[in-house]
Image 1 (tube, helix red, strand yellow):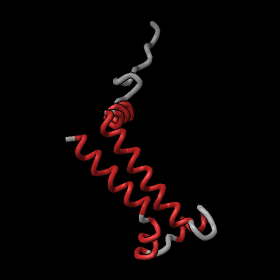
Image 2 (tube, helix red, strand yellow):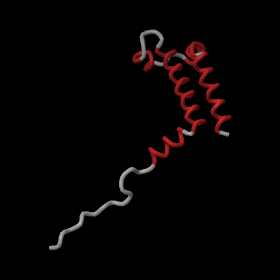
Image 3 (cartoon, one colour):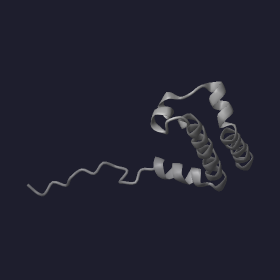
Image 4 (cartoon, rainbow, N blue to C red):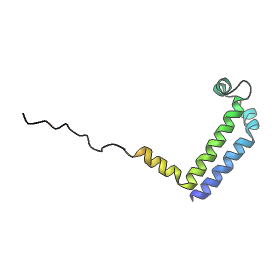
Length: 90
């Protein structure tokens, strides 16, 4: 199932990259992207970056990297219990 979802996401990412000009004409310009990503093309670049992120995420999903990364992020790396300092004999 993850391969089917991955292929669909790759297709969606490809279409976003391919039709970024159409998306900009129909969805409008993104002010933040125009200000931070270029003078007159920041929105197109933003749509292309979104497409690339979707494609990379699809490859991670299909390869199992997404699950491994989520497991690393969500599992605690330190001790699971709060350690109380030992009081020396008084």
